[in-house]
Length: 369
Ligand SMILES: Nc1ncnc2c1ncn2[C@@H]1O[C@H](COP(=O)(O)OP(=O)(O)O)[C@@H](O)[C@H]1O
Ligand SMILES: [Mg+2]
Image (cartoon, rainbow, N blue to C red):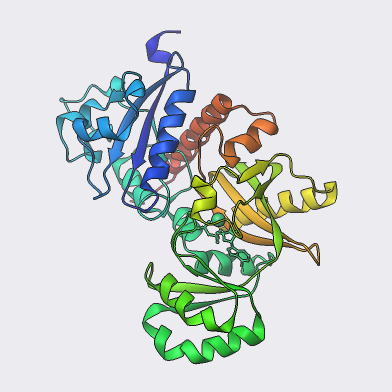
């Protein structure tokens, strides 16, 4: 296969969020897993401060053995002002046959998964993999996400949202109403984060205030939720307007809940695919996953996370992740592998879906007259 037929994938990684390191790992394993005969990979790093990484910074962001497998985007090497140069606009300093044909933003959390980078890519006129601006933003904000799910009549566990500025004033009444409506345990969490950062399990009344104040450090808006004693089940979705749902996987957390340590550090956490659940529950979850994806108007991919309540056997939607962890050992990619789509095929399909979305958008009439 000639080099001009290769898929030119631009991996955008790093980023300003607390999930910077997670993104580095995702990027490294994607680069490692893709066949260099098929994929020509260029990398665009974002530093923790939010700048486009220069070449020397990029060298610290990837494991040395992978450096020889990737291009440092010539446009970005030449000019650190970044994205604009990769837009495909006529620019003599850039050989457009070297530019990525599509960007894979392997960024998690704020400024990556929340629509901001997607907006930048839209303005730059670059096709990208993943949900668009709106779905990304909505998927990041647990408050708005849950309200859309409720509007679509999907099962969302009871929750309340509080603006941090009103927290102290409302503390006593919140404590009282949450105890009455939810009972203990409850969870408090920042509205816009991921990787369990800022999340507390509140076991009793005496932990209530400390927990809320802790979560409040991470956002201007926090959620208080009824604690669900359930199994944690996840379903992967792939597609644009006709999405497909994968088999179901289960997470077994090493800790009492799936906190940061359990997710990324504790080897005792594990995934089971397919989850040992009956066919009916599996079908119900797949159906809810597709409905959730549609409720936020998702595209390309998302992972939807559920609780299967132990007592009642009810299924609750916990959240949608519009840029789920994407290494070959992540739940998202393993769910598709178990559903018959191995890693490289999955990336190819995502490229096609991103390009399809881009074409659809560019065929729209955006001005009249
Ligand atoms: N309402 C809840 N009931 C029970 N466990 C919860 C609840 N909310 C969060 N958790 C636990 O905390 C973890 C992280 O919460 P989640 O809302 O998924 O945030 P993140 O976006 O950081 O993954 C969940 O995987 C689960 O283990
Ligand atoms: Mg989660």
